[in-house]
Length: 119
Image (tube, rainbow, N blue to C red; front, top):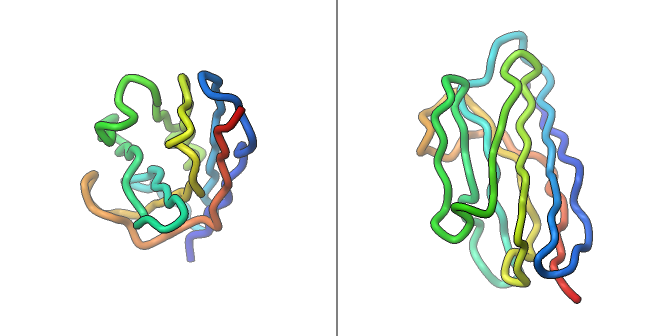
């Protein structure tokens, strides 16, 4: 059973930066797809960014150019560097992982980490 643990959320002012990290355990193989989703109050969970262990990446239009996803395949970790944060980026961010395709929601989820962008 794959377990995902996120870290790095918090409170930041508009225009600021945060880095989220997620570490997977419970598998001895490289996880094909790891990424991030987010859910704001009253809204559905949505894709933020995903990355394959071959280097392919996918970003939501709302974060492209501001957020950067990266991975360490050997360690099965994924990070999300978030720059130029906006109040509308406020949400609970969830790590997501599995052996499906880059553009599919994967079966394993972290517990979520809160990101709040506010002055």
